[in-house]
Amino acid sequence: MLLEVKNLRVHYGKVEAVKGVSLSLRQGQIITLIGANGAGKSSILKAISGLVRPSGGEVLYEGRRIDGQPPNRVVEMGIVNVPEGRRLFKLMTVRENLRLGAYLDRDSRRVADGIEEVFDRFPILREKQHQPSGKLSGGQQQMVAIGRALMARPKVLLMDEPSLGLSPKMIDEIAALIVELRKAGLSIVLVEQNANLALHLADHGYVLETGSIALEGPSDRLLSDPEVARAYLGA
Amino acid sequence: MEDLDRPHRIAWLALLAVALVVPFLVNFDLYLIHVGIIITFNVSLAASLWLIWTLGVISFAHAGFMGIGAYASALVLTKLGLSMWYGLWIGAFISGAIALAISIPLMRTRAVYFFMASWAVGEVIKRNFAYFKDFFGGWDGVFDIKPPVLDLGFLQIDFANRVAYYYLALFAVTATVWVIHRVNSSRTGMIYWSIHENELLAQHTGINVFRHKVICFTIACTLVGITGALYAHYQTYISPKTFDIWKSEFALVHLIVGGLTTVGGPVAGAISLTIVDELLRATGYFRTIFFGVVLIASVLLLPGGLETVPGRLRKLFQRTSGR
Image (tube, rainbow over all chains, first blue to last red; front, top):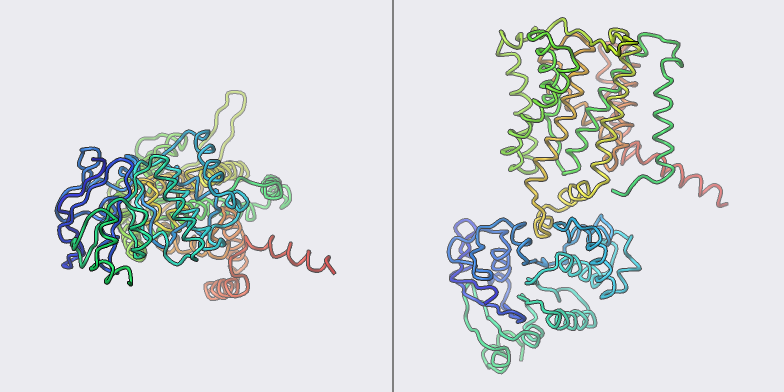
């Protein structure tokens, strides 16, 4: 098992946002966490990346405990978060954003190669590399955000609502990209409100309700589950 | 963040060239050279404060760290009999070491709490100088801090000579600004600006935000410690009041009037406002009021500060020549 979350609990003050969640991610797999706003999806990602300290439970990566490690250590180990809302350093150029993604890499040659790889993947970014990233369209900003995460050469990608606020065409592109990234050997934890999209991409799904797992299973089974269809697929 | 382009480099070299010939331009007028020396101190203070600003915070303890450098160097002379050539480095080292120790709790605070905490640190530094009378001389301060003599064997330069001290101070401020520019245009500078813009995202990216904050603060305070030592041996007298919160606040005003996005901002702000302050000296009691008016006017009429002037002129020129 590449990444394993066991009985994870997260508190914000007295409020318990995550109430004992367990999940697991195998090498080359995509898993998805779906659920309504406030179900605790983002908190789980933050706990994995070390941005919040879990109040209980364990996070294991390649068999070692990583909960309580600072975020920079977690990135160093190969788990990178693409935060919600296409967060970029909006005043900095596209290129500078990508450069910062490889923050831990002191080999400037390899960093330049990495930037070229991102440009090959998203050719539009090559054209806009010297523009402030805040000036780009929503879809292009998402490309920069994902590109920046890839610059760290991660093994596990945590994606928080990558489809949020994007046009249908752009959503298709991002979906194709996620499939491509998996083919390239990445393992992905995908958090989505767009359950239909997420379950079609993922191998395994977890349905979260107010901080705990209401339902889990292989994606195709969840897609055909009448309960899921009613509550999340809008059928 | 980018490296200097050509017009910028020319502007900096022109400024340095003017600074180098200033004593000749003013016909070795001792008062005007004195103003020049004060300008170099203010530029160093503002520029190193700006380095902390690249993290997104302002430290009101900055003049306090200048004081630590000044007192350390002064006491190395008066108690140990070692000249400024030793005191300068000892002052910088002590200022940096204390900054390192203090920034560990200080950098865990954020935004307005950081301002308040740094304010308290500045006040505590000043009070310590005043409280330990036997060691620091209390509110009376330290006297008789002689300027150094440089003995090159074939040539002896006594820095009690004001022109000589001007060139020493000019060398120091040039080195300080150059170091700050180098840090800012490096990968490290880009990291500071990323923390400035979005600390949480910087953490997401894998940046060890806390460590970078501590290192940046320490570098800035080490640099201002050197400035403090030079100040002490120039004035030959220092007291706790010299390094109080007001001094930090004036440096902050220099930043705001000069501009906050490039190192040119604090340099332009400190030079121009020091000159304005000296011009207003004749007004005596009203000096602070006039100074306030100049400050408000510059913020209202020139948002973004003096550093935006070249861009504004370029735009104006393009508009008129376009017709």
